[in-house]
Image (cartoon, rainbow, N blue to C red):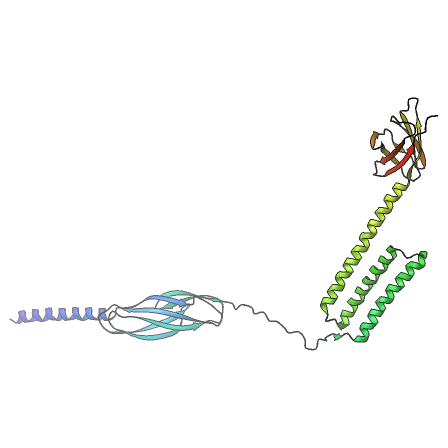
Length: 324
């Protein structure tokens, strides 16, 4: 009987130890399941929140200490109590003074925190308060400037008239253009010392200067071109027209080149009928005869027109001699 009782005691003790070990293991089943950082990227000195999710999968209430570390250096520890099968989140707010990438852990479950250098701030420096403001232009200064510009205009006209005792359109244009340009220069210098507030008037004046100067040089170019053409036209002339030929079929035209350049006669028109000219070049300051085949009648008038390769055209009307 004693041996039987001893065996029963041994079995009961073994069962008690096993149950005790099972309860202890269940009570200790608390783990950190996930760790996040919000926001994941901050600037130096800004706060970031470390969030750890803690779960109790055991069958008894459990107290647990969550240890937060950055690069294996502890920053905070938080105690949490969980009922069986309960999940909680535990937070820790951190900030770093040095930029870089940091390894964040909560009970050995890790995440990453990125710390950036601060963004440079653009600083706008206000203008110095002692900056001088241009003073408004006075009434007397305005009268003086206008009088000076008018005086310059009169002076330029007088100089142009004095040169040849003749005041033509070219000299007038020159005086107007010169006056406006000088007025513009005066306006620029005045703007350095005075406040010229009437901006539309200034813009209109500048536009007027551009228009007048462009018109002056443009008209001057046209005048020079016209003068060249007039010289070309004036350097050749029909010197003589002779009606000859035994059968009244030849008109001899003498053309004189009084200019300093060679001229080439291209065609001769008799009553608008074209006649091609061969070897029509006339040397400077010389004359040349051009016999043209054309059946003419005695006593009738004929219009002779000569054109050159340079585009010059001269005309003359001649009457054929009457029958004897």
